[in-house]
Every structure is written in structure tokens, then in C-alpha cells.
Amino acid sequence: MTNSKRRKLIKRLLIIAVSLIAAVLIGLLAAVVSVRQFASSEKIAPNVTIGGAAVGGLSQQEALAVVQEQLLPRLPAQIELTYPGGSCTVAPQRLGATVLLQQATAEAYQIAREGGIGNQLVTRLWLLRDGIDVPLTARVDEPQLRRALINLAPDINREPRDAEVSVVDEEVQIIPGQTGVSLQVEASIAALRLALTNPWCRQIQLAVEVQPPAIAAEALADIEVVLSSYSTPFNPGQVGRTHNLELAMARINETVVEPGEEFSLNKVVGPRLTEEGYRSAPIFREGEVVPETGGGVCQVASTMYNAALLANLEILERHHHSRPVVYCPAGHDATVYYGQLDMRFRNSLSYSILILGGIEGNRLWAKILGKKEDDYDVKLVRADIAKLSFGIKEISDPELEAGQEQLETPGRGGLRVTLFREVHKDGELIKRQRMHTDVYRPQTKVVRVGTKPLEAPAERPGGPSLAPRAPTLPPVEVPPEVESGSRQ
Image 1 (cartoon, rainbow, N blue to C red):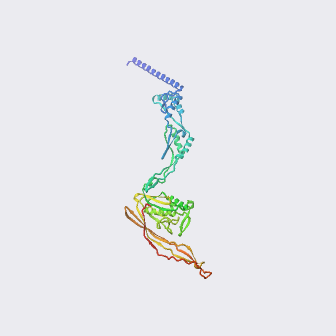
Image 2: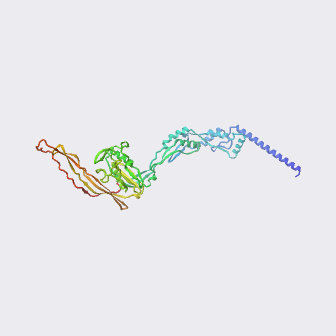
Image 3: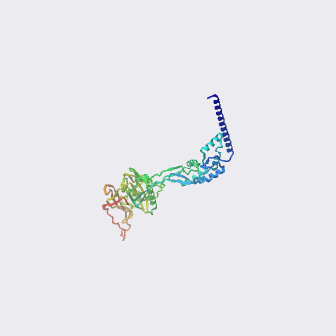
């Protein structure tokens, strides 16, 4: 290439470069002019949206109207507040949330107006390519939110409820328990305060303290059938005694005894004291009937004892009364005295058992429930029953005239009885146990006989004479009795 041609090429390139620079400068000048003109206008930049609603090219008032028309109807009218096992719906306004519409339109208006010319030009270019969306936000009034949660708490809070067992016509049904929930107001405020700033939020998890039931349905998985049932009659007219029966059995009711675990009536029922709620009622003490606080608990012990026998449980401790009782056969009773005499048994079965008990009409009842595999057919047999006659004791009394007598203590017959337990499975006898032999000792009749000399030796017609003495008789044998089955 000649020098002449080279100079012409350089000249053309310079002309092109100058033209391009001029064009760029003119373009920049035009852009600057456009930016300044836009900045002085009342319009929102093109390709700007608020929550998806197009507001580019609109004034703030026009944008506000568009947002109110297009977005407000789509915002959730209710927010679901959830917690374990439940939920409730509340209007956002009740929780102190206010949608900031004017703030959103003001933010949209500021787009491409903030920063220097360079920043504004870059923002305009960004708008041309992708557009910019201004999200809707909300302001939360914390005092109002706190008041709302405090008012909601009674509807949310609930006490734990243990799983229960219902027995209808000897059919066992498990009623699931309920988890306790306690609303934690301050922790919930922290969660809601953040979540409510988003007006589109539809569900929020409340902060709660969860308290599981003491007895869950899973813990009653072994409870399938009624292993045994026993009831004893009582007189509801004896108010204090009836109260004690109900109180003691309520403390036993729903007791779970694991395999190998021991049940102690004294431990479960507790001391029979006035401050524990017990009242005065008659008890046996040294063969006599006397009032004492907690009278009647022995009937609870007797009812539980028979239920334990019929459930084929291992008896660890049992004591009979000094004389037969009216609410169950002799040989079936059990007496207790806190700190001295107890009624205890061990769950010698393969699975857990559940004890139910209560009062129905004029009967005190107890049921022992467990696994079907532990269900046995149990018969209680009373044998070697003998009635024991009472003797007579005379005491000389110089204060009574000769020939007179006065009854000091009435006589009462006694009884001896042996109790056996026969355990059957699938129609076969698998065990026969001699449980105990009880002797209810007779009470001697005591008569005071006068020894004071008569003032007049003459006979008095129709005068008192000594009544014939009842001889002491040998024991009378009574045929064996059988009390069978575990479904009384």
C-alpha cells in the first residue's frame, strides 16, 4: 500500500471514530436529558410493578388505585394459626397487621430516581431488560398483636388428657388421649411479627409448649380384655363410709401395673387421714365395731383382693378380719390398716394390667384388664368350712342379788374356712392353690351372776332364775362352696 492510500485510510477511520464518539455523546446527552426530564415528572418508570400489578407510567395516585383494585381483593382475608392438634383463623388486621400500600407506591416512584446520573442510567437499562417488582409489605402493631394473642390463648390452651379404657358389656375399647398445649405469647409474637410483614402469608405456626399425656394410647396396647371383675354391696345411706369407698377406689382407678411390679393398696390409697379427705365410719377393732377415720377402706381391699385372685395374680400379703363381714363371703375378705396391715399382689402375668374401679348404685366394683393371652378361667373354692360355737363365762357379782344375772358380753359364733384357687386354661386345670385357712374366733358369752344374799329368806313367787347355759359345741362342718369365674 502506498503512502497516499495509507493516509486516506487513516483519515476515514478518524472520521468514523469521531462520528461514533459524537453519536455516543449525543446519545448520552439525550439519555441525561431524558433522565432529568423523567426525574422531574410525576410518573413511575416503565416496567415497574407492585406485587405483580403493572404501575409503570402511572402517577403514585394512579398506582395506588391500581394496587387497591387488583391486589387487595387477592390478599388473604384470614390467616391460619396452627399448633399441634389444632388451628384457628384470624384476620390479619386483628393481629395488628396493616398493608403499606402508599409505601409501596412511593418505593415504585423512587425507582430510577435515586443515586447519581450513572446509577439512574443503569437502572433505566435494567428496567428495559428485566423490569423491577416492588413487593407489598405490612407493618405490625406489636401491642395489638400481644393483646390478640392473650385473647386467643384460652381457646388454644388445653390440658393433657390421658388415654382411657371403656368397658361396655365386657368389651374393652381404648379412647385415645390428648396432648396438652400452652400458648407461648412472647415467642409467638417474635414469629408472627416477622411473618405478618408479608401480606400474602396464609399460615403461621404458633409457639406453644407441648405436654404429652401421662398415659398414651400406646401404653394401653396390652389392654384387650377383662381378666377379672368383682363387686361388693354397700349401704349408700352410710354417707361417711360411702364417701371413703368412693375416695379410696378413685385413687386406685386407672392404675397400671407392669409385669413383675407390685401393687400395694396402702401405697396407692395413702394414709386414711382427715386432711386426705377421709371421714369417720365404723370399723372392726378387736372384734368390736368402733368409729374411725377412713372406715370402709377394708371393703375396697376385699374387692381388690377378689379381683386379683380371679385375675390369677400372685398374692403377696393379705389379712382376714376378726369376724366375718357382710359384703363378701368369709374367707374372701381382706383387712388393711395403714402402716401395719396391707393388701399386696404382684403382676405375675406376661403383660401389663390396668385396674379400673368405682361405684355403681349400691355396689363397689373393680375390674382388672389385660392381654388376651393372660386371660384364665379362675374358680375360688371354699372348703373345710366349720362353724365354731361360743362358750359361756360366768362372773360372780356381789352387787347383784343371788339368783339374778346380767348379760355383759353377748356370745358370737366363729368360723373356720379354707380358700382354694383353681386356674383353668382352654378347659384344662393347670393349677390348684390353697390360698389360706381363716379362723374367725368365736366370742365368749359373759354373764354376771349375783352373789349378794337375799334380805328375806322367803321365796319370792315368780322370782328370777338362772337361764339355762348353752353348752360349748364342737365345730360343725359345712359342705364346700365354689365361687367361680372372673365375670361377676
